[in-house]
Image: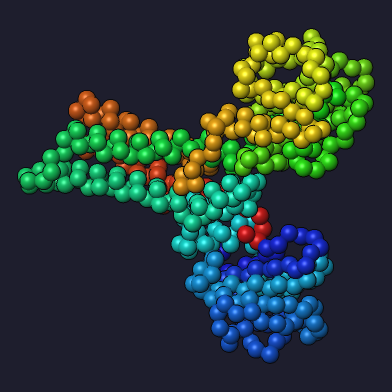
Length: 458
């Protein structure tokens, strides 16, 4: 299958200014040439050039679409194969007609992620760079985009390569001592093994330290906005989203379902869930909304508990604080532009002052304080510096932990004076586990699984 020529639509389906169909493979140029009518044949043009013409029906010679065709010859392309990109008008019918005509010439429809898979298999990128392409596409904040871009450029691959080199040096020293014990080589003492293993373990720990932050930047923080009806939950959602996503009225119980919205708060992506007000009600539809609110509360990484500080605390409020006191919760005192009526001392019994934020959504005050409170919980007050390589992929995190465990086993074996040829097994295992991260040693089934997550045309 790697020798055939594939094609797919690389732009979102629907109406737009243009659409791009990507073709890759050994026969990409001659197959497109069959249905492309222009003053020059694509077989004769230089690489990385764009040509105007028409896609025609190969049987009737009728014009199908007016296009621009870009030619990129191997190996100077994303897949390191000959690539042709056909840019046509961005309508559903026009794109389908062009793609159907390509398929009629013997081009195969690409599988999800197959272009990136070919780039990996042809050696242009390693597995961490390929996986970062997904993160780049799905990035929900500037910070997440920059982290993914660094990984696409090979930042994580470089770090993993350096760790593997350290282990290769260690294994080479062990091999010399095993194979040539009569020669005067550097003595492979317990201290030397410990020093080398410890150095790699510390570097792995640094990478894992960034994992929680990296995971948050990659996936976002699932955040439930909880509170009684009419305290300002929907207004908070609208303020953070900078859009009127939820209906806001003075009538309690306006929100009947969970409204989901992704927002970017100070570089931190939040998956906001605006919930129905939690209260006892006889309204059947509102009861369903309240139950969904309770479900959203269970799944949330962060809870924004909204109170109207112009009203006294109710038994429902206190019961909710009791339920939330051991969760990652920020208490929001809304409507601070009005005369305060609630007892803040009661709130302080359940939550520390750094978890209490005063807002006036009407006047737009306090949102920066909320941003800082979220950052303090998940990023210890600030995001790490731009030079840090974040680890955000669950597969990478698992393999890093496994590699560290293998080195710990080697250390323990070293402490009880196990022969060095035996403890080398654990060191080699760690080296192989790090290799799985970048794709040096990985099962074909895993490769298929990873690239199946991509969209068509990527």
